Amino acid sequence: GLSVGVPGTPATWALALELWGSIDLRDALHPAARLARQGFVVDPTFHQQTADNAARFADFTSTRELFLPHGAPPPEGSVLRNRDLARTYDLLGRHGTEFLYEGDLADEIVATVMEPPVVPGSTRIVRPGLMRLPDLAALHGRLVHGHR
Image 1 (tube, rainbow, N blue to C red):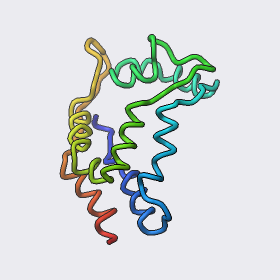
Image 2 (image 1 turned 30 degrees about the vertical axis):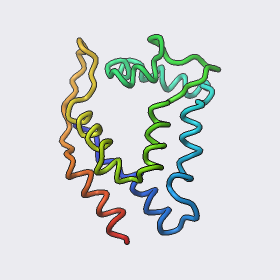
Image 3 (image 1 turned 60 degrees about the horizontal axis):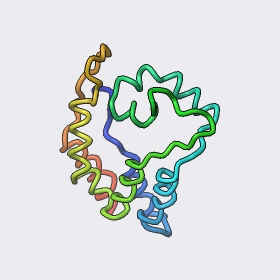
């Protein structure tokens, strides 16, 4: 919603790889995609941080689905997988950061910011964001295209 800023990290990855990297974005994202797909073992810290934020997480459909499976934080020792994140990394690797800033993913980001996925009946005040497609494209242009 309103507190969301334009994500600069993927464009920064692409720029850093272009200027100083020895591998391409696809190869750089492959280990992260694999980890997101295979998951990681929930440790006490992750469990506690999720529990501390459970009320907030419960108010957003996608966050609730990922971080509160079966309505509660994932138990210690369980494996948390984020297949959507893995697919996103795979798409960025195949299509480049343009996909995030100027493609289909950009449309999804802006739609989510402008209409946050709040659970029906939630009493949490969630304000729509101000991000628009030109904001994403402008950041991408400044960070990546501006250095070529």
